[in-house]
Each structure stands twice: as structure tokens, then as C-alpha cells.
Image (tube, rainbow, N blue to C red; front, side):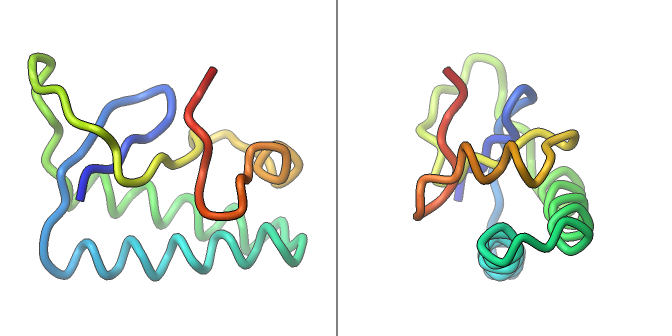
Length: 93
């Protein structure tokens, strides 16, 4: 799985990390849908940390489509609601 953190870089994740990213992504989307700011912020930071710690950054010369695009770490719940597409996060721009 290739994951991009908006405004940062792409990471390749494999194995158990993929399942955990998918679980946390569902939890993050649920927090957005329910308007739970604290849960959203906590889950977003856990998700970003997991990707950074267990993912392998893609090289600058490696081109790959992202399977998942995560919002930047300073995203608010209100911003997430604007960017939420219903099935994941929208790319920047």
C-alpha cells in the first residue's frame, strides 16, 4: 500500500501495518462523520505516526499512485469535513 501524507511524502506499507492503517482510517472517517474533534485529532496523529514509523519513504525518483492520501497533521475537523470525499481523502489542489 502506498500512502501519501498531504504536504509531505509517500510511504510504502506492508503486512500488519496495512491492516492497522485501514482500521485507523475507518476510525478517523467515523470521527469526521460524528463531529468528534478530540477523537479526530487523536486518531489522525496516531495514523500519521504509524505511517511515518512503519512505512518506508518512497525515493524521490520513484513514481507511484497513492492508495490513500492522509490530511496534514494540522488539519482541523472542519477542514476534514470540507475535504472528505465519502471514500477517503482528496488530493491537494
